[in-house]
Length: 85
Image 1 (tube, one colour):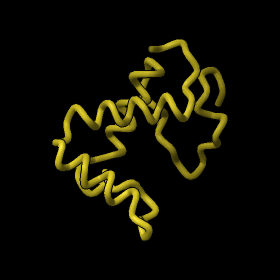
Image 2 (cartoon, rainbow, N blue to C red):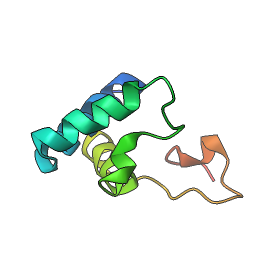
Image 3 (cartoon, rainbow, N blue to C red):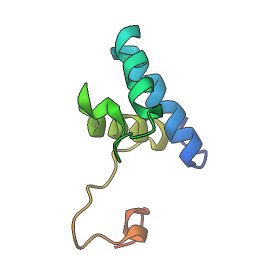
């Protein structure tokens, strides 16, 4: 819901919700298995199945009411806030 602060937990919850709408139960089970493995990769295993960046962007847009500002080498963290450049 736009207007509420976007916290890491809210964004993660929305990401999982969006992922669960497109992934099969078997895929979600495998993603969870890979993510909980002792030698898990640095990135989430959902990248092995889907364009996880697109799902995250969609989750952000659903919460913020706008698309995220693409990151570039020159983008500073605070520059993504509306009204700042």
